[in-house]
Length: 343
Image (cartoon, rainbow, N blue to C red; front, side, top):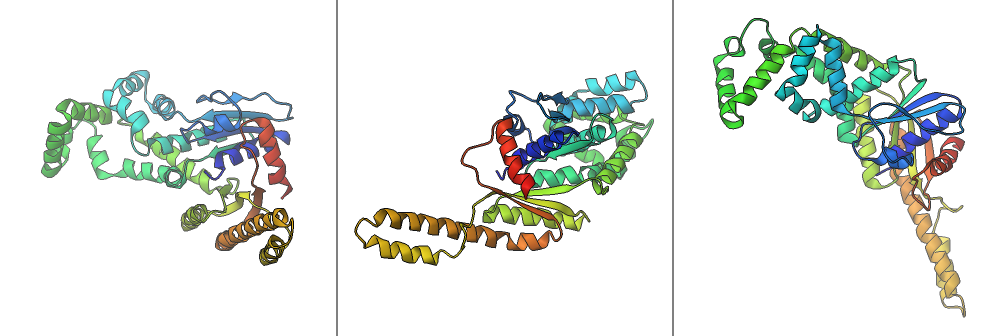
């Protein structure tokens, strides 16, 4: 990875150190945030982390199904409608596994935390690029789905699906039923029927989430490493954000190597050649060769970043040095934070 989860934890810890009430949320189902914070596990609700900082630091990991369940209860007309949806086999299957559900529920949880009075700052640790883009696009996708003519037909009141869709669609449903079983199709239709009347609440919420993403108070921080492949992915992501009218407010480059003063390695190459032939000079020659290699690496890293740096324009740019050990506790996060905040 590029240190994205560690960076999210460092930002949260630094803000708590300045007296703010902070929640760090991970969308990535991997355990990286728990590991970075030195915790055994992280649940789906904000859990306070004990520390000496003047503010508050909490962490949580998204549970898509529980978030979806709470939305159903919120927008159902009554308890009977909510119970019918939550008990539906089709709903139980899709609520945690359907493509896009994880990303939309993440955006919903972010909005919920934003709207609460419990936090001054919410830091979101997104998954890798593809899923991060799904996260940003989830509100718009949900709105399009709820406005789709087939969805409106399926949920139309007092009408069976096969009565309102055309013959070709009916034939498709029958063929799908032969493959997955008519019971599955029946459960799906029952789910959409039970969902009737709840669309507007979901639609309004999706619009509010999209507005939150575009709000000037929301800052997008791009995290990368100076390797060619990582920089290429960061450039792609920055381009997609730009296409959506979203400005990158900060670029954090982790695992940078120092240039060791003069970045040109040729002086070290010459010194190594000269010393290698001198009596007892081999150890010093090895030193100069190693420093030449590190200077080349540092030069290449900065060259790799040149186009990305230009692409993000006025964004704050922070270089975090490569560390000798992994970060797996609050002490390590504090150490990284010193490098992050002095830049």
